Length: 329
Image 1 (cartoon, one colour):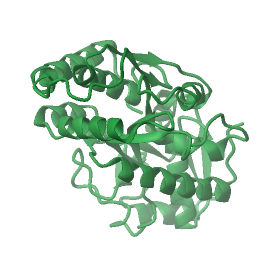
Image 2 (cartoon, helix red, strand yellow):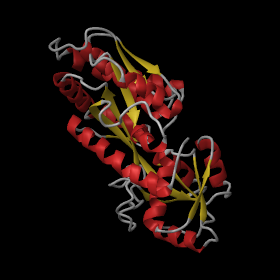
Image 3 (cartoon, one colour):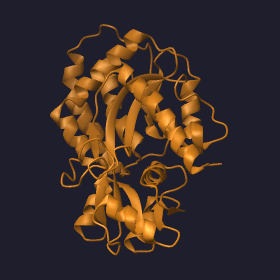
């Protein structure tokens, strides 16, 4: 998930508030919900992707509701602590959660989890997608994903690849690629992205999956090579890089997506209004510019679209995790 400093977050919040200050007020007071202050729970630390998005969305919803909207970082247990709090909240719209798609992976990674990823939340809106790319260090003799798979198959025991930790999207994305390519690879987990990237560019590991906005500057400097992007379409930040489907792996679809959800039982009219407001905000050119600057692509849609995505990804990642024998506890 993208990490940024406090200055960037404040700039994004100011931009979002300025953009929507007049437009939201013009909608009037009809249908103001909920009746009191609202909290957007972020189950991760400040500066992460969901935190940045929550702090952009908060002023938008504050203008719409006419009540204060605060962001509350409740990090811990791979996002399970904050997620549990919202899953158990009253369905009055006063507690929402900004989730990355790790919450659909956690049920298969942990033996016990305090929420149901499908039934335990009300989907409101998917907001943005972050592209993930397969990269190798410059010494790896591969310019395509197929080249890398063939090279890994030729190495004793397979190539070593890095990730920021067991069960992270980066890890699961590489395991999906390994399974679909049918070649051996060895996972080397690190405590966070920074040391993993350091060993990648230091040529102590061969490959890694990275957010595209992290990979592009390193590729420009010649410190790594980008082979393919995991999204359905090419990345805006690297349009010359083929998708995994174009590279011959149509089943390797991997990205980071972020969504706003609430506790189960939220009123349909509340969900529809918030979804419409956020989709309108995502359609603004200034919003797109701000998100692209963070390596994110606006991804508007309906609550039904998000519900279908959650169901599909819970099943898809469960199969990957089972097939690869991955556990996080």
